[in-house]
Amino acid sequence: MPRALPWFVLALAVLAADRATKWLVLQAFEAGERLEVTGFFNLVLVFNKGAAFSFLAGAGGWQTGFFAAVALVATVVISVLLVRQPGQRLFCTGLALILGGALGNLWDRLTLGGVVDFLDFHAAGWHWPAFNVADCGITVGAAILILESFLQPRAGDDEKRGHEKRA
Image 1 (cartoon, rainbow, N blue to C red):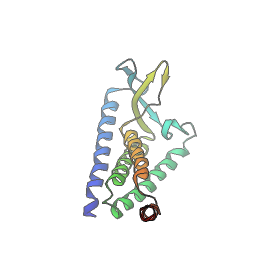
Image 2: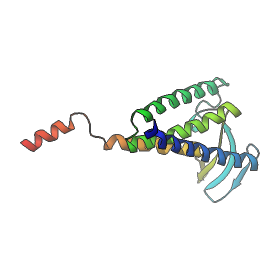
Image 3: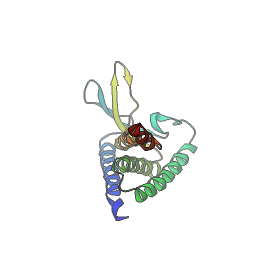
Image 4: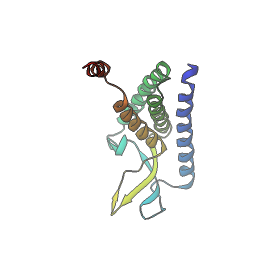
């Protein structure tokens, strides 16, 4: 467990940044309020009862418990992976970012009934769905895991390389 501690600290840092930014937005904005920051970026306060991109947001309430359960299962699975493989730096960085983000959004679901989103990017009348720091952690973590999967040698690659060298 001590070797995995830095990964849990990283997850905690993502959670802390997410909680702090959401607290600031909740103090400064009323639900639905919008502040134009630039010609392509607004700060807003919206509550998302669904998943990413408001998937299932209007599903009648059952989705809050479902997404909370998914986050709890993900937390356990990720924690086990971090403890079992703490030396895999890129892999664990991705997992830790996802863990921190999942915990940040889980906190909102359990305490507010929906996730606080406040970053709103737009161009030419099109708005990207509002998101938050936790979503950034999850997205960057997932991208790192995808990158890491391409960098890892596949089973049998060493054998093929050895055969090619002998030939």
